[in-house]
Image 1: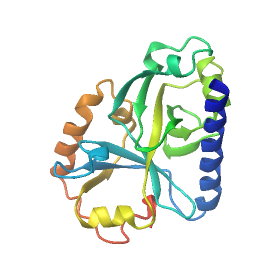
Image 2 (image 1 turned 180 degrees about the horizontal axis):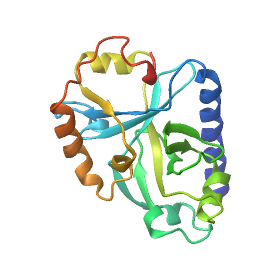
Image 3 (image 1 turned 90 degrees about the vertical axis):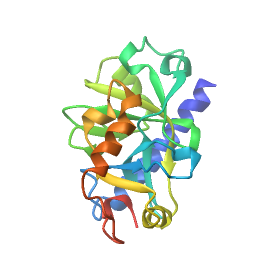
Image 4 (image 1 turned 30 degrees about the vertical axis):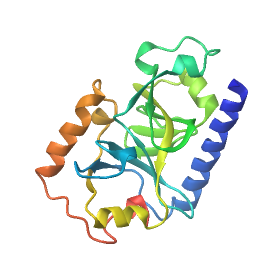
Length: 211
């Protein structure tokens, strides 16, 4: 079972690497954004969520993870045969409704771990099983790690339609919020932050999250 899971992890890693190669010359990914669900957003998959947009996918829309939905599952349960997992890294979060049986992870580090994709200046996205094992063995130094079961994705133009309906606020992402010690406070705080500043969206104004 673990072998199948790790194979899926490698498939996700390959998808992310392809996305990076296809869009590196076109799309700025050094700075991510948060999609903050407005209180009236109707989709139960995203009600009261904050989604970190991490990477566009070739031929599709943007890809991201929900940062404020901790699950009952633990990483030590998902990967029971690995080395001991530090308690601060053990929580698994629900990244979104797509491919919930796969795992992505965000790392906070001073230097870019390989293989991974930059999201913020010190935050990186990966799905590489070998990198995860190296982090857990202490061979790669990180300040924080968050594991996500599944991810959030949109078809081309889908997110833009949702933006036109005013389902979301868009604000700059920050590492402290992503790795917050209390995920329950993230959405209320981001709603407060977003609603007190101008977050008007116009078509074509968000090149970093796909077209």
